[in-house]
Amino acid sequence: MTRLLPALLLAFLPAVALANDDVLARTATGAEQVLQTVDYANTRYSPLKQIDAGNVGRLQVAWTFSTGVLRGHEGAPLVVGDVMYVHTPFPNVVYALDLKNEGRILWKYEPRQKKDVAAVMCCDLVNRGLAYADGLVFLHQADTTIVALDAKTGAKRWSVANGDPALGASNTATVMPVKDKLIVGISGAEAGVRGHLSAYDLKDGHLVWRAYSTGPDAEMLFDPEKTTELGKPVGKDSSLKSWSGDQWKIGGGATWGWFAYDPKLNLVYYGTANPATWNPSQRPGDNRWSDTIIARDADTGVARWVYQMTPHDEWDYDGVNEMILTEQEVDGKPTPLLTHFDRNGFAYTLNRETGALLRAGKYETTANWASGFDLDPKSPAYGRPKRDPAFSTEREGEDVTYTGICPSSLGAKNQQPAAFSPQTRLFYVPVTRMCMDYEPFHVDYVPGQPYVGATLSMHPAPGTAGSTGAFLAWDALKGEAVWSKPEQFSVWSGALATAGGIVFYGTLEGWLKAVDAKTGQELYRFKTPSGIVGNVTTFMQGGRQYVAVLSGVGGWAGIGLAAGLSDPGDGSGANEAYAALNQYTALGGQLTVFALPKGE
Image (cartoon, rainbow, N blue to C red; front, side, top):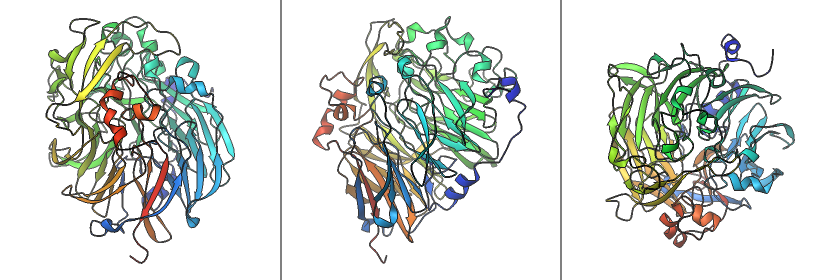
């Protein structure tokens, strides 16, 4: 039997363990952080409560660590026992730090990567972090090399290439250990890379299965009769029928976002990115399965269900943002839910077992490309957006500038993950309030070169009055915001909710903030040396609760400052839109660790 099994054989493989027991044990108490998502459900909720709403105002800096690398520092450090593992942007250095000795360096791993990989990376040289399982620390490098490092020594146990940078493939995402496999995505939709999700064996790194986002059923690991969308079989060649000719081969649908896992259902959940090119006139049809939520069997990779949020995407509204798994009552019945805050400005809530769409509401009220979604299961348009033709970017063809589209391609929320608190039953969402003007143009595909086909300019959304960001609390079942805090710039930091009744997040200016989970009242702020695009984390060590965050401005919103861009149109319009950011922060990579004063 070959290592990469055909879909028909995969469908009959037996399940193994219910989950990776090591990961489950280490995430249970919140004392350690072994996943970037905090837990398999992607809630970014910590049960730790030593730091609470009453004492968070007394947080102090415990110690700091310079990463020695510039550019955007996304993701967060891991904590395993008394060791912290810190990653950097390209060149993707990994440090192991001794928590008993205020961050003394235990070992350092510095990969050797060709510098030209930086040229094919979209939207800054970021990396969203490491993962840990079974004594190994996993790094997915910018050049797509996956490396398994011995957690104690830093020695390389195995490595494997997941893509080809010469064809435009790269990586910015983290990985997720599930059972005996490592779930891995790929970047490169802006270079015409065909997206895929892969599962590698944890022990030796061999490829177990790979599922593409577009193409023939066998290559997508789709069962035409059993894989469903909104309760109905997708049918044969569901992707091929939605593309013109062989456009699906360079159709994007990259998988550079976050992954979630439900051990009970044995399903992995993730989203696919935009179709390629950004010029919609060159790719008629729904362009399936770009901009899609996909649920796959963890053992076989076969898709259980799919849901496409933005068919025939005309605006670069990637669907890769995190899937948050919760159990809540819907119509009086306990229901396994999946909630997703998409780039397109809508928050989706689905039954994660069946894929049924239950809610779809605007969490960013300025979104104007669609007025809403058809939520009637009996309607032939069930699940489809109610588009406003005034904001189509192909209604008059190519080489026309279409104005006032909201949100911009940055998204109402980009990759920075939201959090969920089981105490309040609310989601806490970092928000961007930017709109755009969009000019599509014809572009020919050249392997390894940009395959974008659109020029963008970005500007604040109407009525934002000097506030292009916000941090809000969202009730997914009601489909409405409970409270919202305006921010001067987009909030590009991931949220963290805790059992102490607090929610933490960072700002592009560099402020770490703590707010009351119920009211949004600000309880604490501290100015770190550079803008925060990383995700806040918390852990226990020596009986004390700590909070940690990486600062280092960058990401798409901070690309102008991070990359030293001079042309206002650079960075797909972000350079000019965030030009004022250099008045508030500067480059620099640093880890800052906080704690309450000793004795409290």
